[in-house]
Length: 205
Image (cartoon, rainbow, N blue to C red; front, side, top):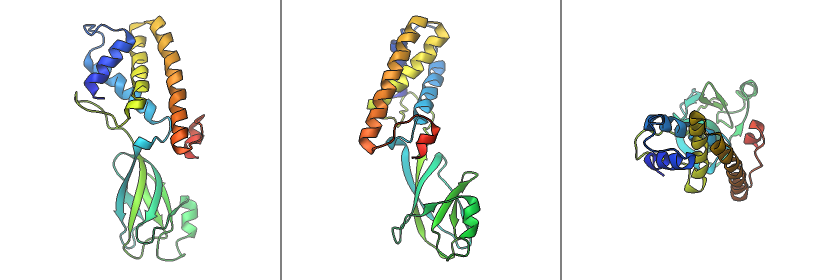
């Protein structure tokens, strides 16, 4: 759904007259982008996974990740299909003398680190969770699929009704938001066998 359509849907759901000068397009855009971010961080949704190819450099252990990467999910050695194991910086020090081919990874200061430090050139597939790009042009679309977009609309409508002090509509939207979150959580567990999201801790199951 495009940004212009999202604004229309938010106004409709919030019961706001399109001519209301209090909620101009730029204000609604900020509410919609805020709602998109809120939905995105609920868990590692399927639609926010991406991958890139990283080629190792001899004697270099740190590599830039994609600009919008927020979390590394896995690193795969393309040559042999081996899955590198996640570790910590402290543990990685212990692996430095264990061969010349990286078998472990960790993230520090936004960079992907391979351990042991590569002594040969190899190619790796870096699978990561990406953040949503801000919506600004009328035809911009979030990566959130249609079956989940209602939650964005309701969350943005809640922000809009807070601005207009429409408490009765807020109550209705708050109940709808809860139902949509439950339905989306069920859909995620059915499609990926994901654990139910109770806290930030559960994101890393």
